[in-house]
Amino acid sequence: MTFWPTDADPGHLEQALARLSPRWTTWTLLTLQRHDHLRISELGHALPWISGTSLSQQMPRLQHHGLVDRTGRGQYQLTDAARQLGPVYEALTSWARAHFPTDRPTAEAERIETALARLRPRDTTTVLHFLAQRPRASFTELQQPIGRPGSAYARLQRMQADALLARTGHGRYELTETGAAVGPVYEALNTWSPGPTTAPAPAHITAPVVQETVSARATAALRRTTTAVQGLFSHAPASESAIPAAWTAASRPLHTR
Image (cartoon, rainbow, N blue to C red; front, side):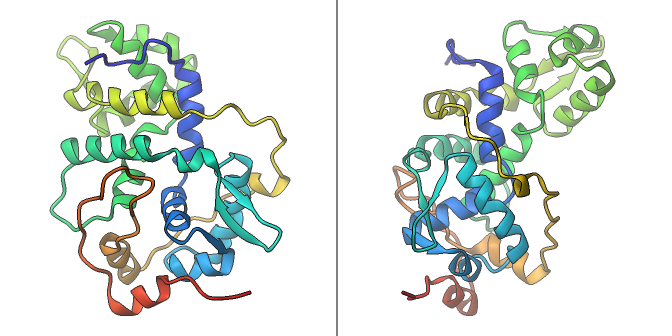
């Protein structure tokens, strides 16, 4: 298996990851896939662990990144680009299942977002690409692709914590089995990767993202919910434990005009 897509640019892949990896993006896209189109209030009912403020900030960002459209009736729906994310999500799910197993019941959307969180930090893709071209590299050698000496050490430390890199006894860095196995994810991203957005971002997108404080009840619920459905996946996802009845009722789309 080829680790790195031969025609892939690390910078372009990092831009694709930046569009898909912000918290709750996968949950929102899979929920829209399930219900076809929803108002923002209906999304809030379907995803009760996400605050209204966070949703209000997120939807313009998803529009700007070409993942959702807003209809004249104030409803949101997936764009064609978002509907083609199935292979990317499948690759992320397979990578996460193989290398980050968990005994806890975990929804597909949460598994995907956790995998994306390991790949999204700036320069992660660039470093993986650099090490894909050579078996080992020193800290000094890795500073060059990172381009910011002051942040290189923290970047490599984070990648070690995320099980993507290992540091040998000679002070050199190499890919772990997990880091080397991410190739299919990049292959899928490179095939999907929509073109760069040309429209300027609305000013309110740049506002600081509200940090989500998820209660224990909400955390347990989102781990058990079956938000991932067929459509964005070409095969049916593995079954997950059912969400409690009260939360299931809240997740059904409202019938409004």
